Image (cartoon, rainbow, N blue to C red; front, side, top):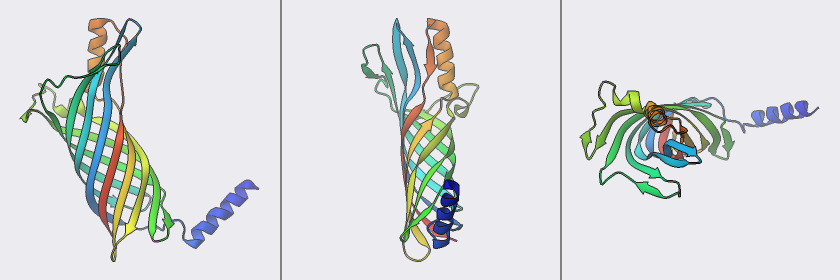
Length: 223
């Protein structure tokens, strides 16, 4: 009985146009992104220690949308703050007066469930992302990562979830606003650092994920 009621309600919503119909659009915009506490830590009762990096990024993106799926390419410039945290919980910045930066591009695909609210379009969304670091810099000088490229060390997979609202403008144009919680998994650099630290110090080091917000603001054009 409950299943029948749910099916009837969904059918009524669909017939009344509450759920968005399939449409296509493309556009561009800007974003703010943060990934915090991405590194390694040891919870050994004799040695509690954590180190890693916080990355704050600004950039621009392009997107293509097919109502229930959005694909985007994001171009970002990241400001990197390295840190360490000791047994007493004290956080130390150990950039040592150096400025670290990343030049990045990421590929992102999200699924969304759009619902018409008046003239606007609301949708919860979730998806996956692959973030590629094209170059890293210390005080404006490109870093040399030896036999492997910087991408081999610092590329990361991630997942994100959040909401978005599209506001209609004139004609086929619309304003796209999105907010996400972004989770980035450890890169090869963090994994290797944990392995080496465990070998040298005989401690229980493990990698940590990076968590932070992502805010996107763009303009789109319906096809």
